[in-house]
Length: 437
Image (cartoon, rainbow, N blue to C red):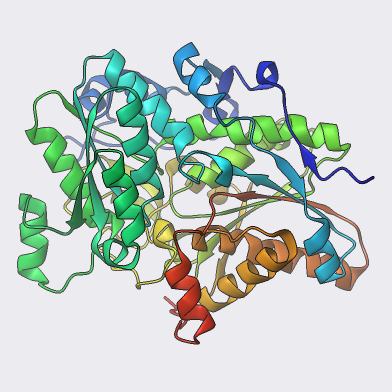
């Protein structure tokens, strides 16, 4: 009988995260303090983030960073997540490719985001923080942070991008179930929000606007820290638990991926699945291809410029060296809300600049077509964000068919789409449209 799913025992779940910066010959350029134009320090970052996350953010020397016992113990509630061979999808595509996916949708909140939320909430609690703020697009990160904050006894406030707040009411409800205060962004509750709405009264929001408001609230509230769900180095560090597990599971399957694919918004799930495998490319031992799949309406990797830019619309964050469409970019109202971000994380940006990874952009309708084919073949309805990775996987699998070659493809299923059925309903009704930058 063909084995389809591969799991690790509790003792095999990683005890350390992998810090790819230690292995990069060309380190990412420094983040800059916008006031002084000097590299930011741990002390400066600690005014916003927890001290430990600030140290992790700037750590470019330690390859391995221990996962705290308290965090790893919470991981064991849902990890390891399964590695799955997609026999059904392979048959539907009539491809010689072997396709695997890492199923991060099985976490308590339905996505990979909990891997970093638990770590960030733990560090904040350990340092005496009583409140955390954050932003969220589709709501996956907001749900994860709300849940993690409740576990560690911290109050949470989430600014959700207004269009997603309206498109995805059940994600808002999930956050509220976990006790979070949820506000559509831009709002009138912060100076940044008021300025944005004064200038553009009908602004539907972006991750840039939501970040500005969350940062401002954190800075104005005693005992409060800001937490982030993607882009930053420490977030991607926490997500490497995905790839580290997948590496062991691919060994159990008796294969090694020729191609690894992840959808791309800011870089957390793409880096999480990719970086542990990419370390073997950096050492010269492997030649795996890594493909980031982003929406064609927000193509920072394929059409953005590499330059210093703010991570938020109001300019509260440090200046980041990244591929960007501009911090005031207004993304189209696609349903993949987690991918509607103007910039890429600094590590991914440097890796793309140096040619270690590739990027493609995917139209909204093509992504949903891929998601529905996957659902029919594998029985899982994927999140709209994950549909982009599936679309890229299908392209590569069909290329294998055309060329008559067998390759092994691994992609990250970053979350399920069971709370995104409004988007699928619009697609099935023929009401979705493509947006191109």
